[in-house]
Structure formats: structure tokens, C-alpha cells
Length: 70
Image (cartoon, rainbow, N blue to C red; front, side, top):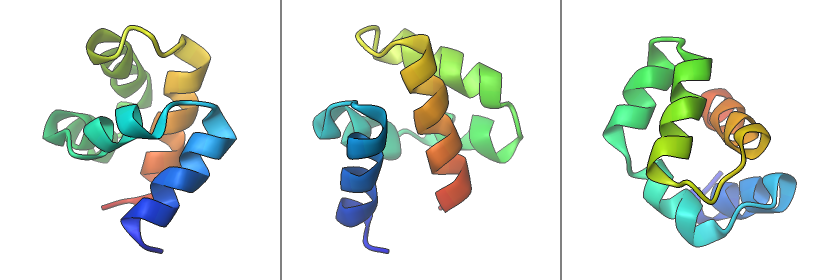
């Protein structure tokens, strides 16, 4: 799946702005946390860099990113 399609799908599923998702997708620290299996830490990190994202939305985004891999 192409990155833009993936981000659009995650945006629709999580109700998070696609522009915010683009920034998160390019964030290497987030991917490091996901690869290490620290899902809760990754969700907290998402909240720290994007305070407008609610905790449940952040967790859904992280799980979608983890499922997709990179």
C-alpha cells in the first residue's frame, strides 16, 4: 500500500488529521519506540508532540503504524 493511501486510511479510521499523521509517519523516534514494542510509550510520545491528539486516538494511530510497519 502506498504511503498516502495508508495515511488516508488511518486518518479515516482514527479521525486524526492527515497532516498530523504525515508528521508522525516521518518521525524516527516514534518508529524506534514502535519497533521496540513500546506501544504505550509510543502513544504517550504522540501526545507529547501532537497535544491535540487524544490518548485513544494516539493509541489507535500507533497500533495502525505498528501493523503497517516501515
